Length: 248
Image (cartoon, rainbow, N blue to C red; front, top):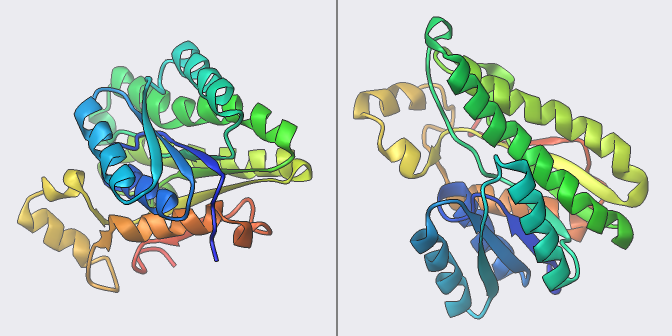
């Protein structure tokens, strides 16, 4: 099951956290994984080395998803080099937390540019290759707060909710080409970002999780493998919630 031999996968923001877990999980199923990063070259090469050390196929690719022209040019180059991109995992994202009255226009613009425009640009650049192949998978990495909202995260929740609307629309547009488009909405995941939170903050967040623990990044990676697989070929326009029961 979930055999991805011969598939070419681009994972944006693949050098750490959820992105790294997705890269490693996809490579373990036989895919050639293109690990995108912006500034974390050492981390991206570490991911590539770890995958290759297990007999997998991976390479690092540097471009800023928030810069449309740069992103499109880079993806076009990857498609030319590999012949196609079969699967896109649009994971690159940032978090800027602030109460509504303190959110600045600059913060709104930055969140939109990375979390929304970056994902849409990557999807638009990849989908041409998928249309020619009459097959493809696009997976957006959203967040539980994109569905539930959260105090102090108005702008971040806005950006993650926008991905869900885009996902559903793109799914309808390209279903006839055998291209599925879905989203993963993780909850509280044990990553570098959450490890920096205070113990009090972590304890408060865990109270909202019925399963009583954080998710392992590998559990998000497993969800990504499923949506990328042939077994999920009849699943499109859906949100796969990996949140321990935070939102049911």
